Length: 67
Image (tube, rainbow, N blue to C red; front, side, top):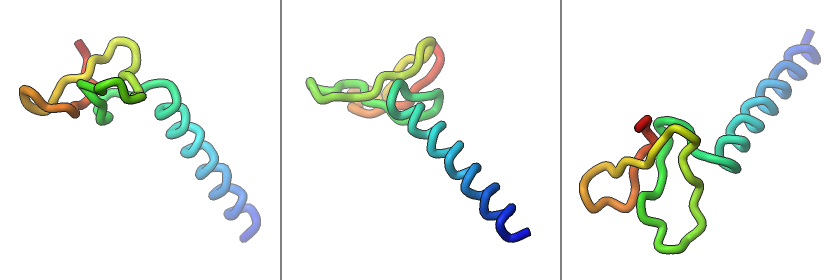
């Protein structure tokens, strides 16, 4: 029984890692932090259909939201 629980836990952690890794490698999902002005630094863009809205006017950082 203990082995089965351990395998389930490992499976869940692997899936979560894959999902988080996928989100960070390609694009930022809705509600995730993003950079409005990157100043030439490598940044992760928001996913398709989302735009990076700054927290307040002139802010460098924002959150990915729908258009």
